[in-house]
Length: 194
Image 1: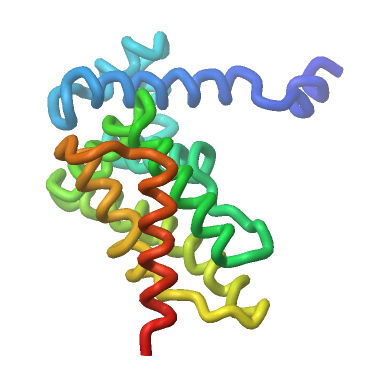
Image 2 (image 1 turned 90 degrees about the vertical axis):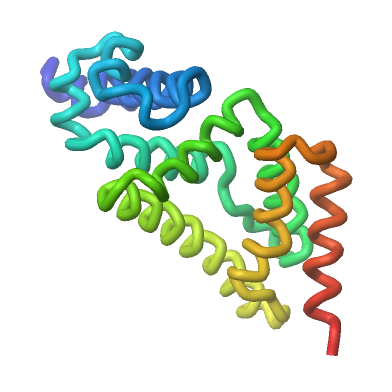
């Protein structure tokens, strides 16, 4: 009976451990930067055994990828409002909010760091980009099914994400909802050009 109750309990210890480990990674990236901490540091910060981290994720890079992808999908999901323009506006506002938020720069630095972390890091970065690309493509496919003319995923990267990330990384100009709307306006104007 106790076993059945554990199996049905949402979250539980596993979810708490995962949340603690993810927060530990985010905090360590923000404090020290990528490459200056180990699985042992993450485990100690999270209050779990490092064997638990290795058993679940295997490598630090796999853990970092999981943190980055989870952050994207939970903190910044791709919207489905029924309108491409509104989807883009909600998405852009979310990206701006996330990058400007307390853990935003740590998450962004984490993804950038994965690109230079050797073969495992490149695999993690590629998995992260593929997942986000898949999510964005879903939004664009829904728009196409409604008869709208969506941009390409690379257009969203070039005209929405890149400017926000550059502003965030270099501290150039404010990251506001109004700025997000301006980026969406520019992206939509590109679709209308002959």
